[in-house]
Image (tube, rainbow, N blue to C red; front, side, top):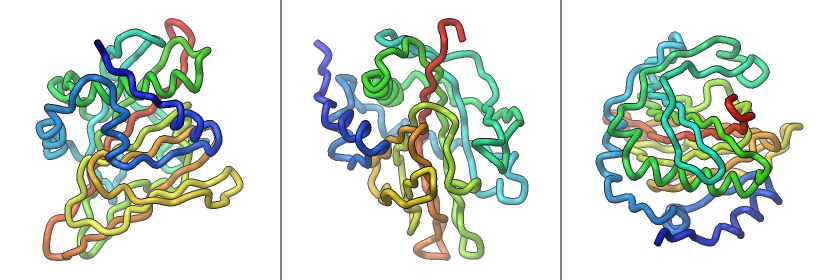
Amino acid sequence: MTHHPDTSALHARLQRDGFAFLTADIMRKLLPGRSLGDWPAFAASWNDLAPDGYLAASGRHRRRRHATFAADAAGDVRRQPHQPHYQSLQYNPLQGDIQRWFEPVLPAVAESASLQCILEFCRDCFGALAPATRHWHIEVHQFRIEARADEAGEPTPEGVHRDGVDYVLVLLVDRENIESGTTTIHAPDGELLGSFTLARELDAALVDDHRVFHGVTPVTPLDPALPAHRDVLVVTFRGVAAGG
């Protein structure tokens, strides 16, 4: 029998504040029945990301892979044919209004129990917040931000922003020799509503993209002589009409 954890407190917090920071201990309790038994292999896949060529000069510090999924309110999460990532200039003034094709998430990663578990958690959590939504367009991004002694890494080069979706999950996979990288949450008028740092694997932020803006401060190496990176999984959910 599948275990469905009690997420009512999380739903109440998201409805009240528009965002929630969840520690790794809480996330482990909230993730549904499927185990994270393949988590080590899942996390290791961040070592095989491709450079983000759309960031021009700064792109050499960001690596990523991208995949698209679909889900019905209570149905399975299904991978969709590879397609570009698109944001309008309204949401991304740095790279909006262009179709960005990224290297796809590898099949073993897309089919992993860890990712399926995370996507099912998102479907159930976000679905409870939007019960009228029957169909979801889901995008998955694997990000590695590299920091160097001579140049900080920028997790959100576009600055404080919205993604142009309904809901966002940001899940920390790994921090290696990194300091800073503080997530900030803002009201539409710019007022700071909260800040926290994803420091341990499975620390997570959930965001209602209609209500709040979010950003992450640049990351720098703790030891400038050693490699430094911040690995996150970003999952976005956008409600669509049937067949949309």
